[in-house]
Length: 542
Image 1 (tube, rainbow, N blue to C red):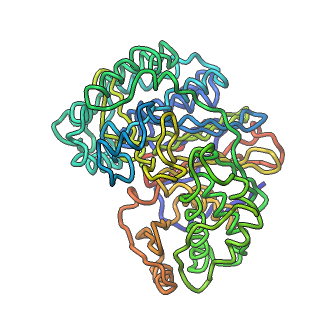
Image 2: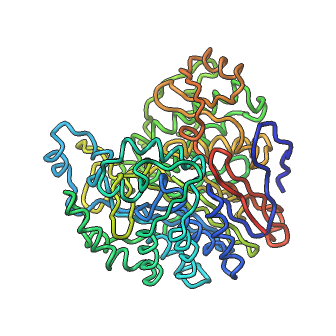
Image 3: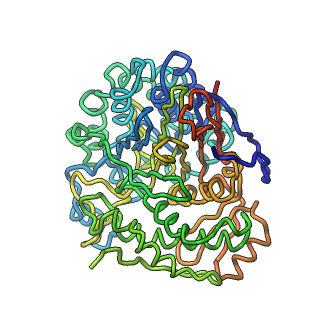
């Protein structure tokens, strides 16, 4: 088994948690909702769904009932992937947006009703429950319904993000009534109730999600969209079908990392690790300038290709196999100069703003689950009858002719949210994720290097200071990073901005690592779990 160093070299408010039945989320009430299902005889899928439903309430800035979702899970025997990202309404074409927003518009709008694609999260809950759950679906909604009706006290990080989004979104339809009942953003410790969402959750519970796509909620969403100049129809919702997919994978240091295939950006982490594997990173000190530099440059190369090529699979001009080809990645690795930072362009691989949670049970089922409204509060639009806070994934489309990600009716946009899963010799090792826009594959890369190359335990890898690549040679680093490392990166030509607010820029992760991975008997050993101190979260178990 992997022998971690459990001495944490970084300041932290968290310690690793060891248990046989575990849930890790970015809010304690959601983690407790998941544990409640495990106590009732449910499995890890039941726990994940209950936690996800609760998260729509307790971290509404990052997700809601109008979110999209992805999942990778180990059912005890094999790995499964689920893509439950919604598609564009049938009315969406480049001409639709150019007519409304001008011939020079490059993308659909960032906010408002014309940024809303079909929400897929509720469909993910129903599909997961039907295929893998043990408890009645209505039981899984009970903790969230209770939270919506009785309310909860707003915690510090959620409050900070809520306050930051309010000036931007306060005039969007339904936003103020739903999220500013005080006439302002909440203060830490104020009680927030969401009776409209309780109404929706009861409808979802009673219909196993059908009312959201083919019933009263679908009708309400069409009416809301029409009233506000949008084009989302009940027929668009009825056409939503979560897709079971085979995760894409790549080996790294004897382990195999699995990600959801495009239309998501998970392949960026696979590309970056494939490039980084060409270097003896473990021979360099863990927080050294050279170690961080190589990781940053590998990530830049990965993003150059991802932003050029990744879209819905049927629209891509290259395959994932071509993007992950070993010879191609070796050639990309040779572009890295250990002595200077560079601004990389896409290669030619052709031959010739999110919540993340994870749960695992003593029978070996492990669930890696992510759902998101995209940017803070998504579109800002909230259907009032059922409290459906709608995502803004439509902004991820392009209007540019020839772009593989150009908007089209029924097409899925480029997606940032990516659950991760690690195996070794065909056995499950870790369900994990790091939320936060394009920080997600960067977080996957940095935390995995710390665990697999340097032997840091999951909580230490989570606590360590992070960098974030933006564009060109520009990076952000957390204020906790060693000043000598920061200066060394500047000396190599990185354009470094030190950020004091870790909550906004560097993501937040949850990790469940199976202890005793070599004997194939997780129920006898259990798990070590970690939760990121950059959020209000909790790693809980029994």
